[in-house]
Image (cartoon, rainbow, N blue to C red):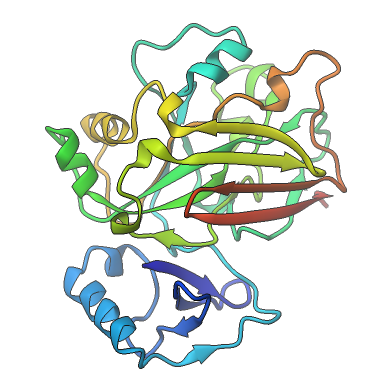
Length: 286
């Protein structure tokens, strides 16, 4: 299933996208797409049954905003340096263990919402990532199979980053990762039955029409199942939590000088196989 949330900011309603492009209203079945729903297998089966019966009301998608596909996210756990190509382009050694950091849930915006260039920013960067959404409470997962079973779905994420704030201002990476609007998510949450192999997905990102990132998840240093299992050793993952699994080569920071960092007016487009497409226009933060 392709689950999504549509409508104005703060007033999104749950919906489902059928294979033929028909948008169906889920409000008669569920309150929202959040951790509570994703942990409730019976509720998800009711949605599946209604889809099969084609009894859900049709929504007119014309002019309808698409919001983040998950509401009330508890935490966003991110993996740094998780692609061989990205580590090579910035001259970093391949990490022996996953590099973890957190992004605040309030960085999340819809897939086509405006991304704000922070005040004083000269090094705002793009990062296409495969996002994993958790569907069951997970502690100390023992096997890759356990980890994959804990996943409720997959989505596209743009882990927007400000490199000066992240790398040149002291402390940890948080300052460069948690600026307002720095985690567009969606358009859909795609359930695992539609993604049989998360290590066979093609990621692409364009800036102003120029292809900047072009890779497959097979290049990950730590595959999706290993990442989820690893994270569960150090913190409890709850339904609705998000794990951003790292970005491939092609970020602005990996280019030779002058690096093509983002500016107000730039347009970023990104897509992952089967997970849909995002498009953001950048504007200056107020």
